Amino acid sequence: MENLFIYVIGPAVTILLTWLTAMRKYRAETKTDELANVTEAIKIWRELAESFESKLAEKESAFKELKSQLEFITKQNGEMIEKMTALEKDYNKLQKNYNDLKNSLK
Image 1 (tube, one colour):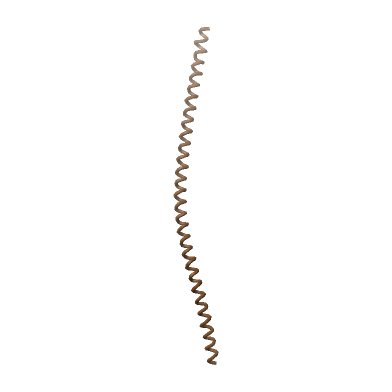
Image 2 (cartoon, rainbow, N blue to C red):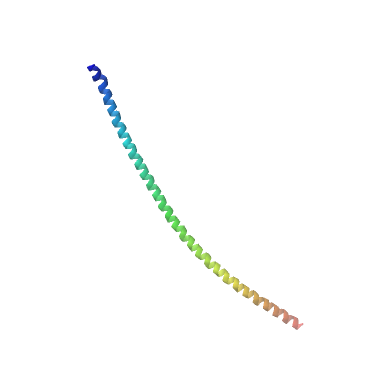
């Protein structure tokens, strides 16, 4: 019986304790690796968010610039339409005067 303990039970207990310790270490390393992966993923997402934020700011600035240009062009277009309307009225008056003068000379 004493030989059984020395040759079988002693090494079995040693193997079991070694296996349990190794599993505990493996789980701790796995959690550490997972934490490192999560930290790296967070870093990547943060960089992407900052990149998108700066691009969004650039696009908003360009949009505001285009909007102000559109407002300026719209204002100019309105002024030109008013001037064109006035010129059409003047042209119609001149055309009428020309036709009246032409008819009076006949």
